[in-house]
Length: 323
Image (cartoon, rainbow, N blue to C red; front, side):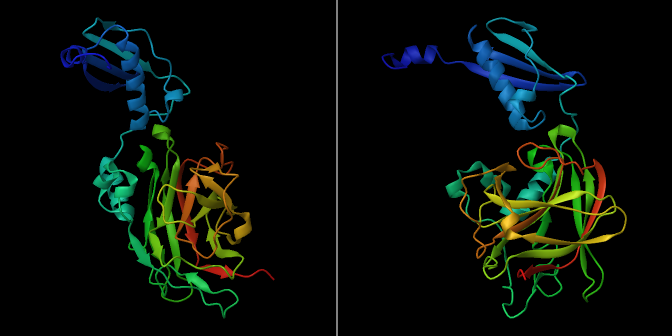
């Protein structure tokens, strides 16, 4: 600190080791090292923040109250975070699946340790621009003619990226003709404060130009009648502003026709609405994402969400002009 000699500063250095011990009743945070009485509060807050980042509790606010020290002196102290009825269920997280997801969309997972300006471009795929001569041109047909093959251009993006355990997969059903459909299926779980499955495209290069169109249309089928979201991005960022709207499916095997006007899309960042956002740039759509989530916008719950198994089938995506 200013005015102190180097030796004085060295004497004031503190050494700290934090150990997390999960258990049925909660998590014990054991802290050992060289720190004074006032340092205990700092240690406690730091431990809670580490848990929040670890995503086992989701946020510091929901992590429950910190109890009094269980044991300790100036050399060692232990605190406990005890589970309460409002805390999320804990389950085993899969770091390998997290790394696989990051690798598909962003490249080497280790680049996440770098500042954003050093991370470089995310993974990209070539796109085909819609025909302006057609009234409702097909822009995505799941690899039949659009060169955007499932597994190369589209990948699962589940709550594993934030510590959750929901799991989904993609498949193509039907033949090479017009009945070709994408099947998005899996299992959602609220464990570890999660609750969403989605699939997303890699970055379109060049971006889709929908400047002459008013929206996107597609058929959808989900036997459980769940509510999903379509999210577009008019930028090539990963964790960036998106434009989304929900659509409902019908229970049973009934197929519904979804028409999603661009004007209905809500600007949002991590599902929080952004009222001051610039208008959607329809001529520069860099990615698409379909989401099944327990939440809608601004923390509101999805009334048609059901935890457990799901299956959504989507027909080709078309760009349309309003009559």
